[in-house]
Length: 253
Image (cartoon, rainbow, N blue to C red; front, top):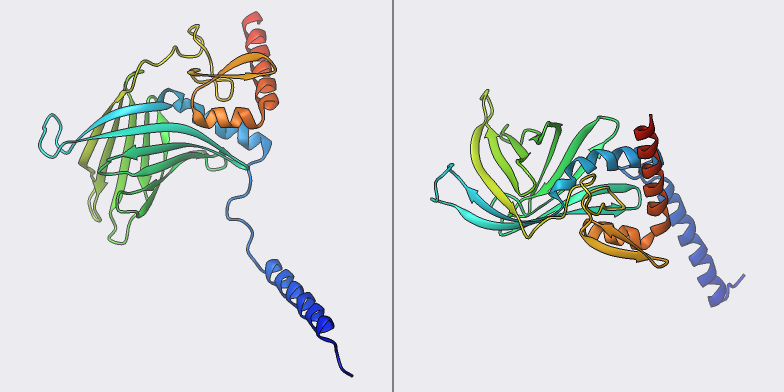
C-alpha cells in the first residue's frame, strides 16, 4: 500500500507530538514552587523590613577602616521585584568591587533570608541569614577551598547604610575583614510610614512616586512597585484598604 506524501507528513507530525508529550512527562517539576497567597504575604512582610533601603545610594568602599588606600566609589539601587509566584528586592551595584548585583528573598518555611549574588567577575555566590535588630547577617556555604563568606547589611539611619564583607578560611574560627562600603542616600527621602508622609500602596514603605487609578492618586516607593501597581491596581488598593481597617481596629481596642 502506498502512502501519499501529505499523509506521510501528517503521520510524522503526530509522531513528533507524541514524543514531545512523553518527554515533557519525564521532565522534573520547577525547582521553586510558586508562592501560595499566604506565603506571598509572609514573604512581602518579611522583605518590608528593608523598605528603608529602597532607592538610590552613593557608596565609598574601604579595604581598611578610615584609610583611603585602595578605596573606591560605587552607586547602588534597591528596587522591589514582583514576578508570578515570587517576590524579591533587587540590589544593583555600579562600579562595585565586591558585588555586581544581588536579589534578596525570604524562605517562609525555613524562616530565613536568602541573598543570591553575582560577583564582578560574573560568578555567583548564595547567602542565607537572619535579621538582628537593624543588621542583616548572611553567610555563604563553603566554596571549593572551604572558605565561608559573610555579609552584614547594617542600617544606621535613613541616610546611612553599611555593608561589611568578611571571610573565614577553612580551619579558622574567626572572620576577617575584606572591605566595607558606606552608603549615603541619594537625594532626600520622604517621610517614613506613620510619620505623616506618603506611603507606598504596594509595600507600605515611603511613597516617592505618584501613580493614579480611576482618577485617584496613590504613591509607590520604586519602579518595581510602580510596575506591580500598574499591572494590578485593584488588588493593591484592596490590600491597602484592608490594612487601614486593621490599623483602625487596633487603635480603637
